[in-house]
Structure formats: structure tokens, C-alpha cells
Length: 312
Image: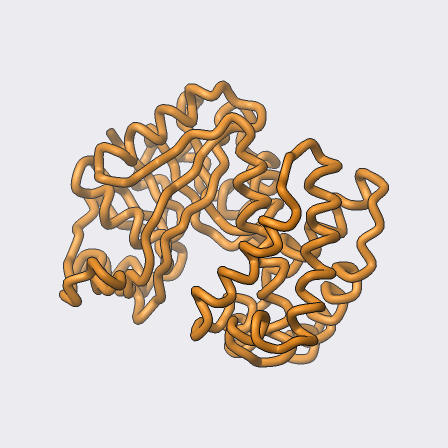
């Protein structure tokens, strides 16, 4: 099967690399050094997953790597790993890879990526989901694989068979994939941890364990997650509130030494994805008439913080 990748960053490299074991993988990235590195050395993955990684650096060679989607042509499945603020433009640029039967898959964190893709791609071709994989970028085309787990997929408007097709392709390469009927429950489940951790750690310049160990941060996280639960339940999802809150704290502990992606963005003076984390709680809350004052406030504080270095 011909599988295209839009974006070959930390997580995209893991999926693209491993899928070369079973498929014709074609990678597109607008950052030329990534494509140059992949053409020269392949996708380099340091196998460092605790308990299973060998510590070795392994090279996986895609069939094609290019900055120009026209060179790739139409693919059977297009897996998108582009930050949400660039998604619409990236998908428009990638239209030469998207035919009427192409399944477009997004596995990114946050709530709102689907909407950006749907501005370009018919909704009956879009599969949405998330991943438990962890990875850290070391250099263009070179990543460190730090965590593994299940990939979840489902659809919002497309036939569920589209998700099954994508899942089957990943399973052929050794991925563990579960197709969910109500995929938004999976999306929200992961989002609750991001809601609890990302903005607070970024504002306070602390690693994830701060959320569990500091009494004030722990209470702030509770308030944020409680609002997110109100919104998710109003949207039609079903959750055990206490279990979801406990899970958010568990993630903070399990990833205790990590610097959240939002904190990393602030450190590198990049635009954060706060709008699809706490900002998504606020946006969807307004749709259902659910007040979200804590998420509203922390989103504004994050936007204020990034405006200092972005100048806007």
C-alpha cells in the first residue's frame, strides 16, 4: 500500500519509519533539512523505549522523500503530523497526494485538528485518532523513540470502514490499533491530561511532576479538568469523572521528568497549541452553553505569554 506522510517530525518519523517495514512510504516535509537528511541516511530512530528498546540507532528508508507533494502523487492513505496552525495550508499544498479514495488520518493531540483538515478534505475521507507513542526530535530526520502503546482510530462523518482500512495498514507493520465507535471519548480522554498539565507547566516553567506534587498546581489542574469534563459530557461523551481526574494526575507522575510540549514551545519561542487544548474546552463549552472560566483565563494567560516573544 502507498502511504504518504505530511510532516516528518518527532512522532511522524516513528510512524513513517516503522511503516516502511510493510508499505511503500512517501514522506513530505516543507523543512528542506529534514528531507535532505532522510534522503541521505533514511529516518534514524534511536530505540530507547524503557524495557524494550535496544538503545541502537536504526535507519528506515522511505520509498520517496520530497518537499513537493506533486513528486509523490496520489496515495492510498495520507497520515498528517502537522501542527494545527499550519494544517489547512499544509493540506491544500498536499492536494496532489489526495485522490477521491485517499483516507486522510490525523493522530495529533488536541481538539480541533479535524476541523482544519475538513476545510480542505471531504469529511467522508477523514479518520481521526490519537497515539500513545512518545518521541523526541534529536536532529532533522533523527528521533529518539521514548514510549509506545496503542493507536486509537475512528470517524466522525466517514464510514467506519475507512478507519478499519487505516488500522489494517498499521497492523501489518506491527502497530497495535483499536478502532473506536465513539472516537471522541478517546480524544477527550487524552486531552484531559493535556488540559491539566500543559499550560500550568508552561506558565510556571516546571516539569510535569509539578502538577501532582504542588498542592496549588494540583488544585488548579483539578479545576481545569472538571470544566473539560463538563464540556465533554455535554457533547455526548460518557466518563467516570473521578477516574479521569485520577488519570490526569497519573500521567503527570508517569511523565514526571518531561517538559510538556507547551513548555517546550515557550522555551523555543514558538507559537503554542493552547488553542486546541484549553482553548478547545472554552470554544466547545460556548457551543453547549457550559461556562469555562478557568480554561478561559489560563488560555488568555498563555496567549499573553507567547505574545511577548512572538510580538503579536
